[in-house]
Picture 1 (cartoon, rainbow over the protein chains, first blue to last red):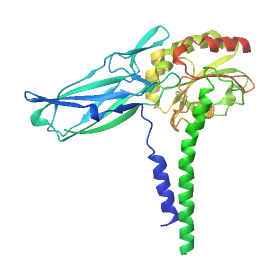
Picture 2 (picture 1 turned 30 degrees about the horizontal axis):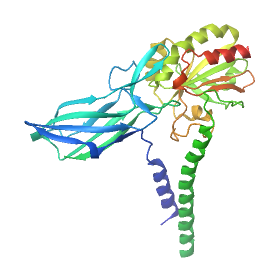
Picture 3 (picture 1 turned 90 degrees about the horizontal axis):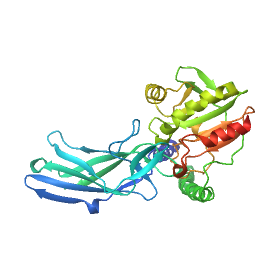
Picture 4 (picture 1 turned 180 degrees about the vertical axis):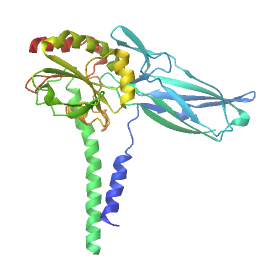
Length: 146
Length: 196
């Protein structure tokens, strides 16, 4: 192998170093239930201790809300998707109080049974901060066998 | 020839191994240094790194343009919640201190001009220069080594405020401290009053 190839491998390794994530997907805590003609899926996520991410709605202008996106074939469609947040934390920005998520939360998804893909892929988009720093927005990809 | 190849392989593997170890050790060392620093103001007096960046109106701005001024630098992005909270107070500070020879700039990190114009300048009615740091290199050059270990290697210390005196020395640097968030820039104003 030429010297250039070694350098190429090294460069590739550096470029694709895994980014630090502040939210974890908990596949073992996923709940999948069949109700009538729908598949009810509960996806669980955990914000790592010491960090918070922006709420999924009612965030001030300019702030990036947490959102979730599913990669489904064109023929499949989502009936319903929403976040269930047990409790929000608050951060005080001068005169404004702003809600953030700093513990576990659930995303509920309803898909028609005939529309159910075998593998559910998606990504959670979020922007995290802790007491000392804010981090660039990132996407947490996840995958689940249904 | 064969010996050369195996020598190259060995050198590559050793470099790779050392680099990996180095990446992790940086985190460990940094964690240690952070635990010793719980205040938002850093004792970090040194020569300010020179820079040359384009402003929103297309002018090249250098640190040396502010040689006879006291300069307040705020490091921001449009989506940074704390930067947005501080922005109106930065404008107030600029209006109150510009007659005393204080200039204010924002260094916006890794964002397109149009977005910064809309979400920072227009939204907050900012009248001081906003400079674009497309790769974050300039903002990163101000960061004290190892002080924020969680930041990835391509991230910077957002919401930090830096005061550079007329001699080009950093006289004040604050890191975000959301538990004691100083949106109204009380600490910055206090330091400016001391310097004036």
